[in-house]
Length: 379
Image 1: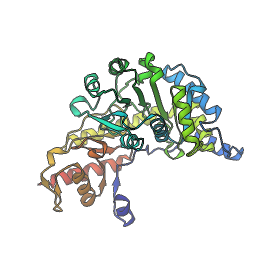
Image 2: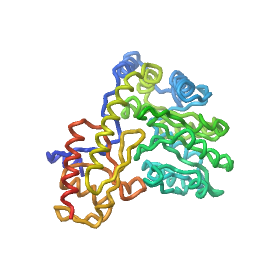
Image 3: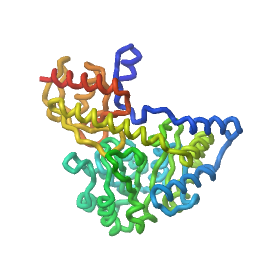
Image 4: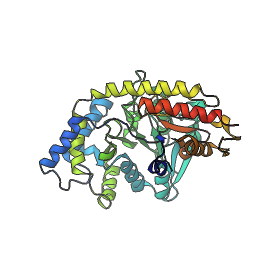
């Protein structure tokens, strides 16, 4: 709807995208150009070129204290394909996948495609949008095959601390059939000097049952380059390779060479990006909390906020639209005030909406003004 409105010439501010608004750093672009000029445009190994797998292993050793080799790593066309491969290669009919809600929208759908049952656990604002050991223990059955953890989270920006991950690991240790999918794609976008931890790092005895996922999309503004990577148990990686061999084969050769530069080169630009994102985050959280009827927690990382709008349910907009749920709220806001957000129920937790602050200061300022005007008009 937002795209159609833009085509019609309407001034829509879209804060629904899940990608950084920065450009890919020049040295990485140069590496991609260099790969083209050097003729590195042929098929590669299904699970990635040797140079990138080594760079991935070095990254995990250097930044996450994971003792892995290139043979323990796998490359695909984006983080989503890693998840798809892993779940499709391991799940059988009737298996269960525990997914804390709110969740990234693809987790449950991929589990369903694999014939499994997604088991959602509501983690509301009172829990900081995070899974507790008690909640996890209560959801586990003999059919549980995977637990999905995403930290920092899309859509909430919530991040688990070291102690929180250790406590979750203690629960998982008791159930030998359970594997963990740790989606760390927003690892480098943490604020307020928070330190990032991944569960395989703090629970090394669980490492043989953990698939640690990452990529260059968010950390290096390379969403369109389509490179995700992971490390995990070799039998699972081998099964993923068989599946990928019959779907996309390898990721783009050019993108892989660019990703080598991304992982091996300087990441100094991230300090500036984090400063910009944190400033935007603080501005947006303050602005949303100043609007009557909205309540917004301060996220730990990523570039999203996930405020509650449920205080406005039961009202009617200036344009005569009934606001009975979060989807009504965002659709009416788009139709009447030209701001595109995503309703919280799309992520498994109604009563909220997701706003991406990966946008210019001027767009964020104007969007907040329009959201405030919309809310003031609700009766």
